[in-house]
Length: 207
Image 1 (cartoon, rainbow, N blue to C red):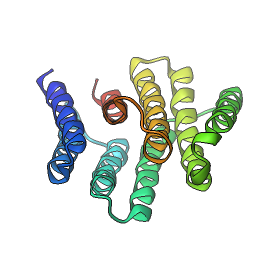
Image 2: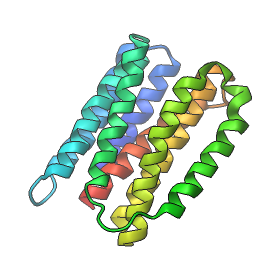
Image 3: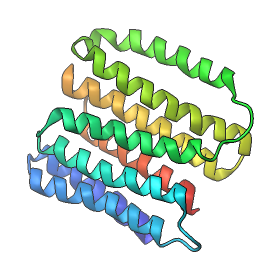
Image 4: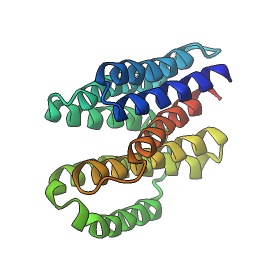
């Protein structure tokens, strides 16, 4: 319980530091919150296997991506790091799947993604290519976690699915807030949904 509270507090300090333009403090606590999740993942009872290694790699890459984003450095590497982290998470969930693919879920998510893209197009017209790439990666992450939940019907799979959806919401808010129109309390909403996503994904492996 205290570990989760520490993660939440660290995330709040990160958001506050970003709002106050204290980049070093924001970078430190952003990395610290993800490091806490990494420690929690490796402190669980039982052996840490291949799936946990992929999640761990995703967390480490996310630390790098967050640091680059907050410090406003190497935007291309930052973007590539976000993509790589999501692919690491996706790999951990694809490895758990076996049997037939639930195509109707993929079709539904794709349709929702297309509708959302055209609705948001006036707000993110300068970012069409990055948004398409990010959207495709997030779509397959939503697909694999949703399919895992439909097949397993477990609380762990549900947490993973909710985490992937939260990550998608965070990315959408980020694109609008940073590149089109600042949102009211946008930085806090983005940080909260982003950290919630990581926390739910990690929780799906330790609860």
